[in-house]
Image 1 (cartoon, rainbow, N blue to C red):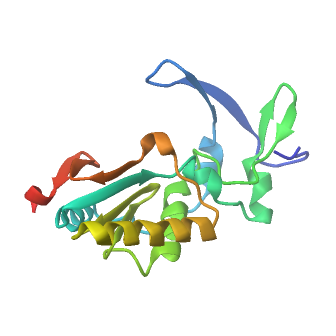
Image 2: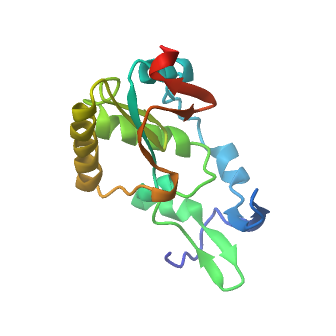
Length: 181
């Protein structure tokens, strides 16, 4: 993270306890978020995404590794992400968690990258990706195509949150399976 001096936007860091007891350090972007216009890029309708997925007997569920942090900040916007620590003031080169429009920005990027695969062999909800197929052989082809695209754009997955070749699983609070068609 580069040092940022003389920024009009300086936020404080706030430690937040996670469910597992570990501490996540967050940046308090409430003032910046109040001043930012709302990005109305649509998130997928969960019921449509679940219905599209449930029509397939085989799935792989993937989660991006620190998804928002894989999107680079525009040069002119980096200074707006300035935060203060006891060691100085710094700003992000990548999109930080906590920005009002982070979800919409990330979804727009995923739609841009996977537009030709979405609603066919892939579903994307922000940093969650689902590869789906009607036949077992097709599933490997679909996964390879998805992985090739991820590699092309240097996007990484969190292996601890990925499940491959599942017949059913919970998706955004709903259980999906071939039987749930």
